[in-house]
Amino acid sequence: MNHPQIVSRAEWLAARKALLAKEKAATRARDALSAERRRLPMVKIDREYVFEGPDGPASLRDLFDGRRQLIVYHFMFDPAWEEGCKSCSHLMDTIAGGIVHLGARDTSFAVVSLAPIAKIEAFRKRMGWTFPWLSSLGSSFNKDFRVSIDIAEGNSEYNYADAAELVRAGKVWFPKGELPGLSVFLRDGDSICHTYSAYQRGLDLLLNTYNYLDLTPLGRHEEDAPGQSWIRHHDRYPV
Image (cartoon, rainbow, N blue to C red):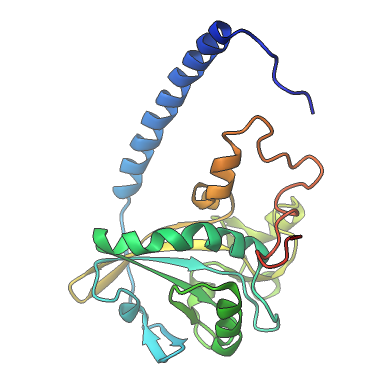
């Protein structure tokens, strides 16, 4: 990899100011996009979802914990696996410390996976996480929010596209199984509405590790480890 050119401080400052103008334009564009996202129409949730938590059954309404907004992260954890997805774990590591602040903005956060609660609890404790994490095993929640696909059964939509086409294009690597995503809900009185869901690169904004690395000259330096192949569970990096 070629390193950046070495120049004088004055030349560096001129280049930095030119980049700053682009950064400010990107920030304004992101603010406008966020405002447009907030204006998305909503879909009322008519189905009763019941999850299994460490303290017993919990409804989707229970996950709000009395607040008006709820963010759910769909964590890849197949019932047959003994541990959760390493890439989802990477994202959770970067989110976990900030969850405490969401309540001040009337927003709750929960994680939902298809794995049974016993496996979830064992892995959560291993990772040292304290956020609410529930099992959707036995419900249609994962399929309804397009994070469990089975092309053979016709449940083949992911990231607002046909999963079969994504498999053929190499953007999804298997025809059946669990995939990552995030969904947002708003509670208005007795009604719960689905307002937003994101998948794949739509989750990049939440990956603070990448946000840090993108500030450095070497960036994510993934040439020798494409995508997230370099990611490990945080207790499996070399000491």
